Length: 75
View 1 (cartoon, rainbow, N blue to C red):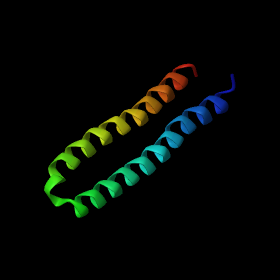
View 2 (view 1 turned 30 degrees about the horizontal axis):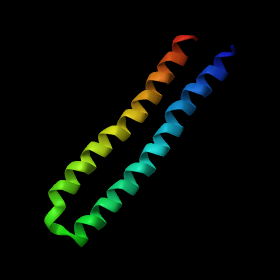
View 3 (view 1 turned 60 degrees about the vertical axis):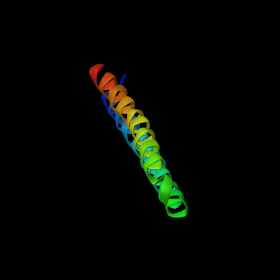
View 4 (view 1 turned 90 degrees about the vertical axis):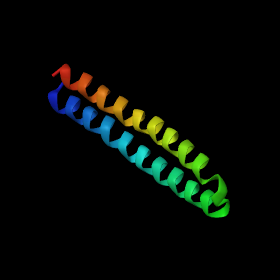
């Protein structure tokens, strides 16, 4: 394949994943803050679940970066 096409694919793998993860983190954080504002007594539980959710979201972008490295390894 063409080097430019591989570079474009690697860039798209990371950028589209980053956009999706950024939107997901923003939505999850906003909803968690709303839930804590409504019921402050369960704030610790919500915060714990938010951190777990954010960790799972981070794995998506790490997989995108891994795919980009695999694509760039074929250059």
